Length: 458
Image (tube, rainbow, N blue to C red; front, side, top):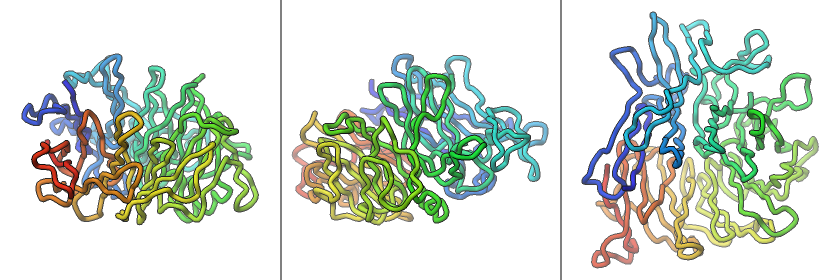
């Protein structure tokens, strides 16, 4: 049967029947062991309150269909011999039972902090003399690093990205493949990969230096990573004003990267991304553009939509039928047509409902190339989440909104949550539940909500 998996900051993974809420819970695993001093990480220990009231599983897991394995990274605080250890592990769970696979879990990093000094018990390190380095090495600091991006499975290897908690130093962004860059968070967007085995991502606030004698640093950049021999930077793009972006906390890394289908024109292999300032960049994946030391308008990319055309982007765009969809913060949902390898500077259509902080990452459902619906989740700071559905061809035509019927009301919103669409249902995670939406019986359809409604809460 179909299963929906839920991972929480409480360090638990749940499996529910995706079609019948009456079946209940199929299985649950918890990585907490209170009797042995294993808990989630208190936000104050990370010196950040972006994630409250506890830190556990943040990045979206990835599933290997071939082996029936769900991979997930969990953060824990563990007291051993009187010392607090901050540990991050990669778990490989059987999707049928929740049991650990392949002799797991694997400890990614184990860091001890006693209130004054840091001890690196285990974890990777690279040569470097940057922030927090020790003896010419930069160590993986499991206390400082937030595993925010979604995991990527590529050619049998799980790739994982990390950023900081609230830019609290010392930290370095990391990308590891199980098998210092600027922070890699992308508002929860996943690492992207092409058919040639390259991995793409954007980085946030951090040092940018590719000319010095030290190991290159790629803050506020788009990166292409080669996976041919480990993980190495093969190409990059950095906006001409990266120093201003970093100083004003307008990092490029708040937005995820979207690899577009092959396009007509001079550059068939394109990538689109945007950051906190709302500028949209269209890059040639075969030559991302590097860094140009000049001024406005000189970035060596296919296209720059400045202005900006969208609100602050804490989001990843969606693509459908040669249109790119963006929902920026304090802005409406917009559809930008793509023709001959270039984006229209103006949207073809837009919604009438502005979202506040943090905007939204849209999802698309469709019957092939027709009957497209754009789903977005409005996450008000202190209110319930609101699920919206729009006609993909005309975003001014709203098909559904969950705040119109009392039975459809959602619980408190969680920032960066993305609606998941599968088999005619829409799954929405909130602060306290998983809500399932589906088509109403025809006799109960109304013109206000076009026949959609909440089916169950799990």
